[in-house]
Length: 146
Image 1 (cartoon, rainbow, N blue to C red):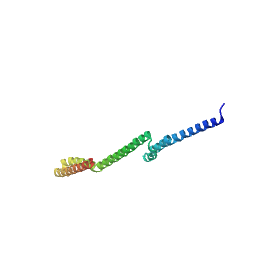
Image 2 (spheres, helix red, strand yellow; image 1 turned 30 degrees about the horizontal axis):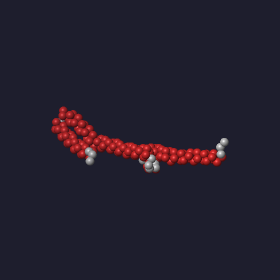
Image 3 (cartoon, helix red, strand yellow; image 1 turned 90 degrees about the horizontal axis):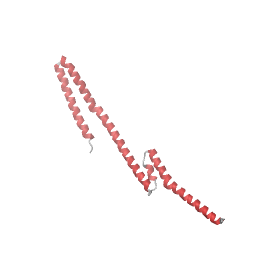
Image 4 (cartoon, helix red, strand yellow; image 1 turned 30 degrees about the vertical axis):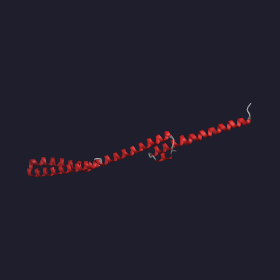
């Protein structure tokens, strides 16, 4: 037979313990996981700043996620830079080389009819190729890392 007072103390202690466990799980596990989830959804390290400090594993996860976000930004920057370099090459050097190829084809046709005109066309094409090489050298010099 239980004493009512002992029963009340046991139930109250159990409820208090359960409450502390639920609070601790919520504060130190569920909330940090929620911040990590929002960080991943937003693709931003911002919500990670709300993770309470001193939680060893969550600190480690936050550190790894911040590194991953930084690497992602660096990779996106690299992809944008390569796309820009490709556009610059296409808009400049590649078009000049294509035009030079057309000039050579035209000079070949002119050889049968007018050697002087063909020679002039070859001189123009040689100049265009020299300009393209200069452009390409400048382009490479700009693209090299500092």
